[in-house]
Length: 139
Length: 139
DNA sequence: GAACGCTACATGCATGTGCATGGGATGCAA
DNA sequence: TTGCATCCCATGCACATGCATGTAGCGTTC
Image 1 (tube, each protein chain N blue to C red):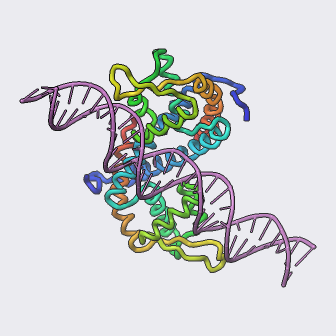
Image 2 (image 1 turned 180 degrees about the horizontal axis):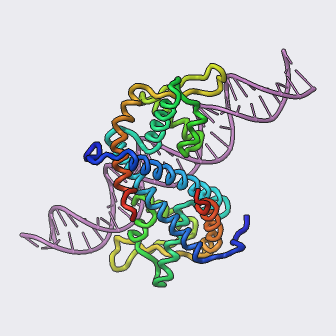
């Protein structure tokens, strides 16, 4: 709420500003590269890949039949509505499967399909290579 | 083009992946906060503020009548088309002014209006406060 | 158990974005 | 001059996103 800092420090302000610009630049560079390469090769965007990765991780922890949507939505930095549509797209693409919970029929479980696991397995090395290329050089 | 690294190093791969996740999280947190607060208070988004800031910086360097669009587009991490529309929105809002170059009539100059300078002056402290709140705590 | 509020997800709508393309301006070569 | 490739910006289109709202299920209170 305070418009200008009580303890105004120009040097700290400049440092923060440059940190933010660097973050913006790295984010744009990497996200753009992922969208382009994974999009062309596997039909995946940044969010799609992130979701596949989360599902794969959850699957390793407990091999049950998927994970609650709510638990996943928080991990991909999307609004609730955007997440809902992301899952819908990926279900249509055959990468995940939605099933209503039996104990709480408001919620849904989201599980990888075999195709989803396979797609992730193939896309992962490309994703990691892009990270190495764009994040690796600490410019 | 190489699908999997010649020098495969699981530890380095994990480190890169976590670095990317942290970057995604920080970007989402900060960008979202900026969009919300600057949007409510000043009708500005992340890109709008960035452009105002670049224009203000260029203006200080050489107080001439603006900057070439091409030179600015590279600094805000937008596609050429998105940048074109960003400028159109901001011109409509009275924040910038477009003028055709006289020497090369393909290009345009983009200059701050008085309203644009004023809006930036007011928004800047809020922007910096958000950066301090979201980037400052090195979680 | 009826009514109410709350939660979990879906959807209508407005908007911002990237890709492909369009259209005018420039430069160069024949 | 004419023709052609290129550059700079604008625009049609498809699509992803966020906000607001809708809908169905849960829980509590009386």
